[in-house]
Amino acid sequence: MGFVVFLTTVLLIVLLTTFLVIDNNRKKALALEKQQQSERIEVVSSRYSKIVQSYGKSRIVKPKDISGLSQINNNYFVMQRKNDETITHYEQVIGNLTDLLENELIKFESADDKLTLSKQIYAFVEQLPTSGHQFNSDFYLHQLPSLSQQVITPTLASTDENVEPELHEENV
Image 1 (cartoon, rainbow, N blue to C red):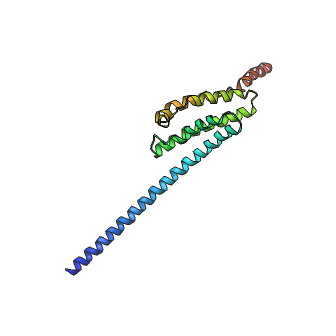
Image 2: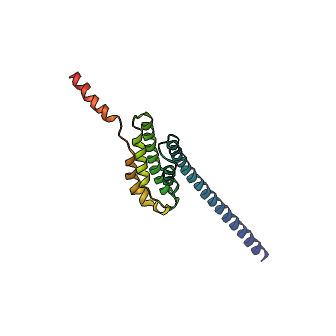
Image 3: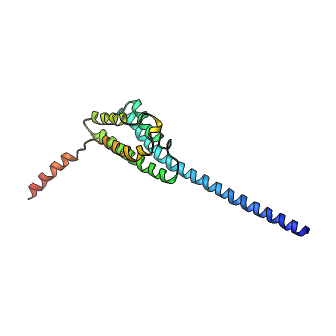
């Protein structure tokens, strides 16, 4: 009888230890996943913030408009959960907006008409939601991509297109 009690006790200890090890590994995996998600968010967020700050340093936008631009990034996860799907969408949407703002900044630095971009950024910021709960998934899926197209300024490509046909006519 004592042997059965001893064997049962050892078996319970082994089962409890196994459960604790598995649970600890699961917690470590979840913590690692959260850390990786946070790192992905931080990379996109810091890149976007640098571009927005460079708009302020270049005096393209006023400080109050900088806070409006920053809200796009800061409010993404206010109304949405952090999971792989939303983080991937965040990387895509904020990444595209960052690329667009970066390209416009490059155009701004080489353009003669510097007022156009300032006006377009101001109009863009004016159309952004005013409260945090309005920055929901619908805004990021549907409204932001179309709003961000308003920031695009005309390029010098139109003058380049006019030059090309003249070159081809001379060769003929």
